[in-house]
Amino acid sequence: MIEAYKRWRHRRGFGIHSPFAYKVVKDVIDQPCAFYGYQDIEEALEHTRRPAELRKFARLLLRLSAFLRPEKICMSRSAPDLLSLALRLGYSRAEVTGMHTPSSVAKGCTLFVDTDRTFGAAEIEKLVGLPHITLFLINAADEVHKRIKEEPPAGVTFYSKRHILIFTRPDFPPVIYSMRLP
Image (cartoon, helix red, strand yellow):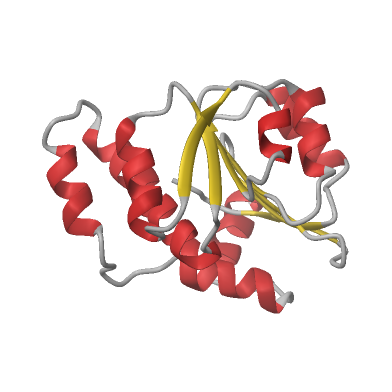
């Protein structure tokens, strides 16, 4: 019950003292207003199964991409095309590539989206050691959740029961917030 209360509070910005984390919550995670690109997502959803689930992730990824403006985005090769479209809608100059290995992230990727547990906990640990990387782990493995909660990386981490959003920043102390992510 306490965990649910924390998720509710943090989702609305209460108890978040980092200005960067607060901006992420207000501009990316809990952005209540209509956003450009939502209509394109709706049109693409007409041709997919699981539209409600994908809609939430696509909208969040669009806002995340618009917020970060990454030059190169690496995502799981098996990710739905709709998620790749959402990332491009957020920042049209971004190069979205599929990947299989952590080394592909080191080659210029600043945003990493894993939708199918492509990497294990040890590989995720290597990724969070890289500076200025953003990782969005959709349906993260229990082992990854456990490790991130025990030793959060330098930067800001948001986690829910199934998903993890990590912003590695070497100049930030490790901060972790429980929050409902789609």
